[in-house]
Image 1: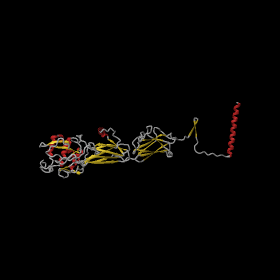
Image 2: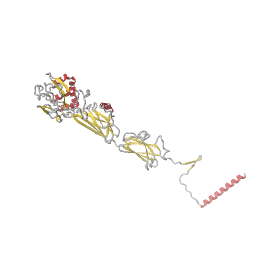
Image 3: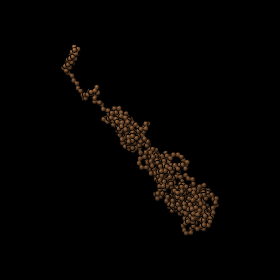
Image 4: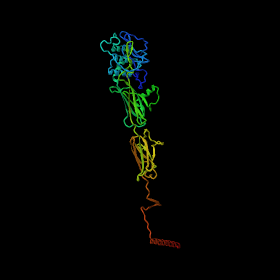
Length: 495
């Protein structure tokens, strides 16, 4: 069955916990003997009818309650009480090393289909394992009359028997061969972190890619993802698949703000997900089960002089990859309010911290808007002789502006609320942005109104000096003036 077209064939979970072991000793009952129908060692597969009308078994066996495949054609199948311990390299029936491509094909198929519960797939895999581990070496070595230890697997004959038993199983043989050729190991895995600055609380897209020996992406591979100093969540295009997976497993928890997740690669062999930094150095680790370079077996076991082998956890090895980034350090803004004429600092000035548009709030290092209780951009007040105020833990880089809210006393005349004084600049990671906002002081008036006409104030310095003669003359003038006033008053009275 094809990888995509046969969804019932499942990969083992990336954690390595499996329901059935990928073990087995590819061994078939002796040619010409008919196994009992109730033989408990035969489990998933097909019974095929041979030319001589006898039957044989292609499929898995139960060993200690687990499904296994057997490899030593025409030797005794493993005893159900047999203990197995993976270790030795899988060899051919003739004791020779498997060609590298054949070993890689076996490893891939054991990883992909070793725990199948589909009898067509199990029979097809058993047929391929026999044909690869007990191939014909010389003409006539498939003669069933040969000693069991010398007889090769008659591949074409058994494919015909399998076709008669199940056309679907025979079709799976062809598909599995092509699939193994296309996807065999060694695989590679890589984690690609996003480009650009990373910020606390702001999700960014990471990718994990799994490729085969030819550099082509492998689809439908479960990848376990673990985040450090971060949380993970699915990317938009994989959200539906993950929700469906969680629903089928009975997990109804939301798929966000988690430390780990298991996702499958897409058609291009890629997992795309969102990673949200929660610390200074977010890391994403990926692990998956990949085809081993060589399948392994249990040490051969001798049963009454007949040696058979058990395929070990066969085609599996753990593949890991990771990516690490550094979160951009936050920046801070230091604003100074000054007198436009003297350059001295002004305390008590109120200013809003905004973005470049001078309306919306600036952004904090956690990606949230810096709004005050009133829902408007946060306000700071300058203080001290220098007239300064500092705002820390701002997202960097970003454009920041400080906009005056109200003018301090003594600077109100030049303040225009529709176009208030402001200053803007670019904040860099870990840097301090210094901004200065100047206020023009109120003008001191040069004239004081008195009635309808202004009385002009003298400017500059006036110096006054006195002399004795001058004082006497001034006194006489005052007396004359008084006399004139009295005379004018008497004349007025006579009339």
